[in-house]
Amino acid sequence: HGQFGDFTALAAFVRAAGGAGADAVASSPTNALVPSAPERCSPYSPSSRDHLNILYGDPAALGVAPLAPEGPELIDWPQAADAKLARLNAAYPAFAGDRRLDAFVAAGGPELRAHAVFEALDERLAPRFGPGGWRRWPAAYQDIAHADRIVGHLALGDRVGFFLFAQWLADLGLEQAQAAARTAGIGVGLVSD
Image 1 (tube, rainbow, N blue to C red):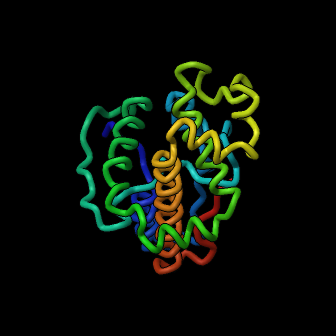
Image 2 (cartoon, helix red, strand yellow; image 1 turned 60 degrees about the vertical axis):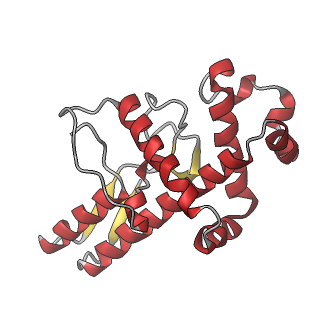
């Protein structure tokens, strides 16, 4: 009702599917999209195929109270995305500096950080250059070699931290959904194209 599914909902679904005898559950791609353009919600137009769509993360995966379904029958993607981003932003301060988050960021290495920098830059620059408009950004902003200087210059350190947190939350949710599938007896588990 007015909300889209996330990895917590997927975990609940695979539990039911396993109980009904499913051997596999297939999902649409869960690739990262451009958070500054929620109306561009096609999973076939990702900003990265190596990272997850942060909107599928759910703070409930970390013990935050879940939201009750509410709203209209149809999904207003920009409105639902704004609501989810607000929920993710509200959860972030409680987990910034969490050792599990730090371990995830360390394991993700430079590629994960570069993706978080991209998302923070796109969020800041979208009003001027359009969502996902990195090809129109100043040349220095397009070069990852300048990332730390640009992040410092634009004071985006906290936003980079947020996007790292959101990736961790999405990754954790997907892990929990896959574990739920295995526990429910779904031999193949989750499959995504």
